Length: 101
Image 1: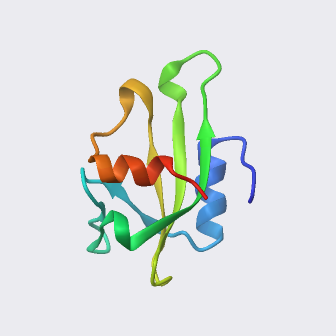
Image 2: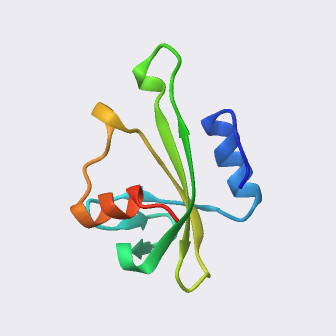
């Protein structure tokens, strides 16, 4: 797995490696309105996770996930703040985002 120093470097590195879909968490699924894609938790795997913690500012905290559909034809990223800035998500989605191989 690659190692990145910043969120921007992670997003650019993953994009260069084919993770081109920009996903958003929509409570109980991942969506990409640009590509009209919607994936339920049982339809994708988290293949990488990169966590960044701000040195002095909690607003700088972020997690970047590399996501692949189980069929392998969709690869994208989720960039999500954690802590008090976290997006609302269902229990199934939270379990999916916290369980890593």
